[in-house]
Image (cartoon, rainbow, N blue to C red; front, side, top):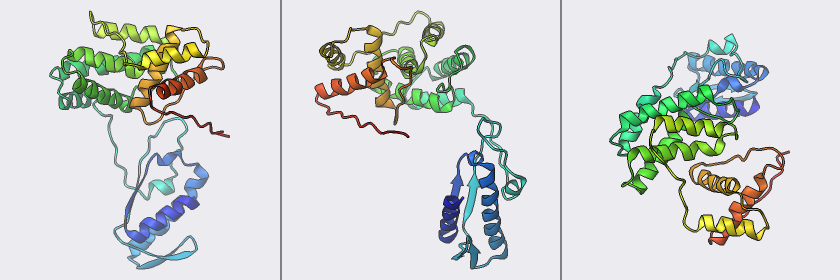
Length: 282
């Protein structure tokens, strides 16, 4: 609450607007203190004072200040807002976004002529995957995951304009989702893609020089060349190119360290010096 108090004091003095995202993730005991801080600011605004006491210090008040909060009620790990906090804010309810419409507009803007049909296929695939695949904490079938695929599809379309549009989207959907699946879900997801894109075969992309570098690194470290593990290195390489941060998840002895180290050594062999720094999260 002290950190939030400092932020609020800064907003009040400079007249800025502040938006607190996922506000109901804050612990209920802290929310009660924050509600008192907000009530103090509101009273100062109602009384139109130039200065007022806040957290033991007298500060200036800029009347242009505004405080907004966003929240997702009903989610796990979220707190129900106390009535004292609710009373300070005017509610604005947002409906679920039309995913198909968003996909269609994004595909059209990237030059896809069959955007309407492809947008339908994308949203149906994500709906079926959400219903039929196993429930994992790292699976995401929402708008954020869809926009990442759309960005990748746009990049592929510009890089290979001669490829059929259905093949471009099929490859983006497969390559952006494939790395995150647990072993049992892989064949199910590939079958869903085959059903939605019948008769289309989309081989994995070969990266000039990189695949050969991966083989050399694995052989030099005396590892048996397993296609599944080599492909996992390529998947990590693709993920690192399209995501800001990456989490490698798996059981002890599952090959996480080998995959990470192989990627680093392969990139170093190709002239891209890559170093790893281990940080203890504890």
